[in-house]
Image (cartoon, rainbow, N blue to C red; front, side, top):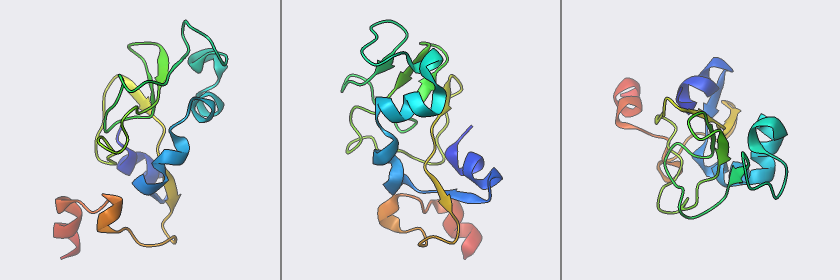
Length: 118
């Protein structure tokens, strides 16, 4: 599921600018639990925090790898709210819709959103 849909179900909106706050193993562990993200320092079934792992759908728990994964290159591969990966359970940066309106810098305004508003 993408973050636009996940946040929308909660009457919230996705805010990529908040994603860096979520992009850590301790936060993933808190959200998904040690059973999925492993104990701190675990080598197996733990949390992957490396530049080797990156993508617009991270941070997330990977069903395929059975591990939590942070985005190792968030500047180059920022979180995209509309992206989904079937094998990942995403940790979405949802904020109240009453918060500051989305901006182009946030990467939130998509062509689809612009067409619907116009």
